[in-house]
Image 1 (cartoon, helix red, strand yellow):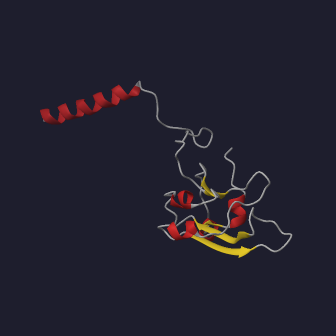
Image 2 (image 1 turned 135 degrees about the vertical axis):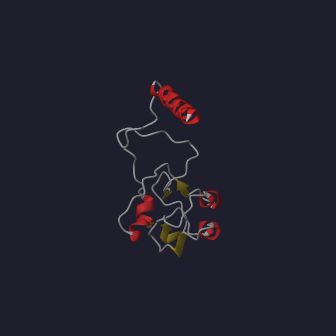
Image 3 (image 1 turned 45 degrees about the horizontal axis):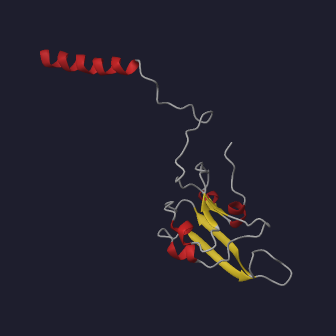
Length: 145
């Protein structure tokens, strides 16, 4: 019985020590914690200063993705229709955010620095199809408020 009382007193002592310490709880979403600069969140496709897409549809990101979460369909641009800084561009670009493991290999493999992982991490959706980011969504990444 003495051992039980001793264990109870030890537990209460630990509890009372923690009462004076600051809380670790963050009132989300009013307050948000800062992430490391190396944090990898949702993908985006970058544009150059003139507004042209940097992605040339080479498919290296698709080839290097260990989760097979990226799909790229490339095409040649028609005369007078400048989409990319070169005549080749990605007609369709999709990232399956459910399959993606956010390893950053697509970002490293991109020769034009078009694929970037943003610090945005709020990836909630009510449908699995909403978790497939298409080209239009990737060209206009969300802004954290």
